[in-house]
Length: 622
Image (cartoon, rainbow, N blue to C red; front, side, top):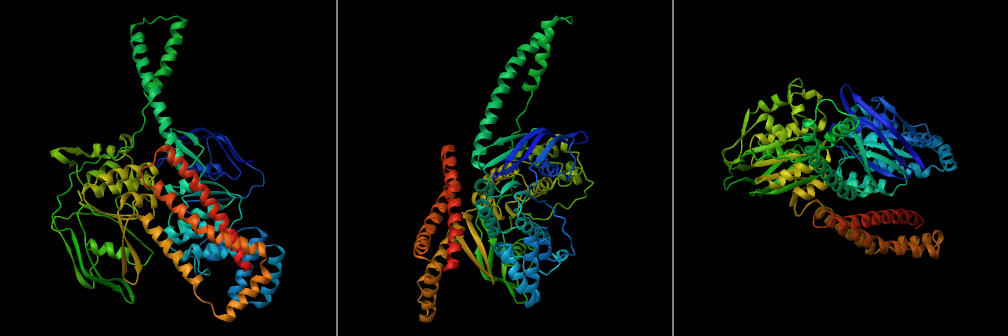
């Protein structure tokens, strides 16, 4: 069943054409994503589809009476509403009942609870009530009576996501749903959307998300849209094939164009009908021959400052804010070309650690020794701090007009911008006209222009498109200095780091050899072991007998057998999922193997989610 039909949709801003004559559709149950470079019009396209922004021409048709929920990058929530009121701000009667029940629970109103209990049962809304509690818990939206206006930007984003997930909509349209989520939340959302029967259209830069959740990729490029029926791996393969074919077509056209150009020059001005047709064909040929494929190559051979033998040393460093301990007697020596990833929950000391490393904060005890040759390059999450009325090229010239390169060469500010994916026509744009991703790329360029040999990147992939992230990864792969990365982008972390500092709270830091996937695999293994130990622990006799009676009373023999079989199957599927994920991120598979293993991973995730839901149902009986 067709949920969305788009025909010949066109949108421009003044002389700038974003997209032209887009035609595509979304079917029921389809999970699609739109990928494009920053500034190509992804968010604008979503707003045009929903009628929130006018298009120049075209027709957008949704199926009648379709329940749609939309989450924008910057959600406009009522600041006077409480968290629970904002999350359940929907017109469905079941949601209104759940909200009333939650309010009565908060007020401990037993009279209302009795009536609402009956109403929830009649409307079969108890599953929704459980879902509300689950979503609020996973997204760490505690203190549900707190006003939205008192929340941080990240908390507001999570409220907006919770509101969409609890809308009971049939079609979700999400713009960057993983922004401001920690890694646990992202993985939960990934599993939730994969297992659901929802129809989905989203914009996201999370490449693992695209790999596991999506079955269709739409690429917005060259003012048109390309459709790829498959996940992210399939898209990369087919995109490469399409560009190879286009390059071949351009080369053939160029050869023909040279011959036709010679003929055009030799012809007299008076031409017959046949000659005029050939001239018109020449014009079409010229358009094809003069096409250029954008090659995303971030070249920045800036001369890196020489590193001495001493890099950075932490000697029994401690730091606390009142009763909150950030670091406790921490000792560590950084090495040349070290590639370190940092993970941990908010408030465990990650930012404090980076500030002490760069000298912005002092330790309470111990000392930090920094080598004389070390030049830090610190890229923080904050947007670039320059006058928004400055031109892009002046932002670079403010650092230097010419930048020294290796082997005594130098590069002008304009040449540097081009190599950092800023074409000439953008050099004199004002900073305030740049997209969020373009501003972050400009800030990163200024950091790298300082010739650092110790790079610290705090969430460098936020607001960067997948193409910019790929070229940044290529640059960092060749970077010869020391590197520290703090990121929620699992794909980026897996490619960039070879060991992790896991900030566990209370000043404890665990050093794990391997990338983020290695860390998550070890964490999941520890959790499984803990569950097995809990199961094997002896139960008190009275509780054991009571549980036996409850199971005999509520669970029949067939259900008991099914329950036991699921408990055996789940660990096997988890292990296979880990092996497939590790293989996909290894970079050693052929295209055919990537497609096969990607398809198998999707099937395993679906089976895991299905069995987990069934296990939960049976465990309630148990």
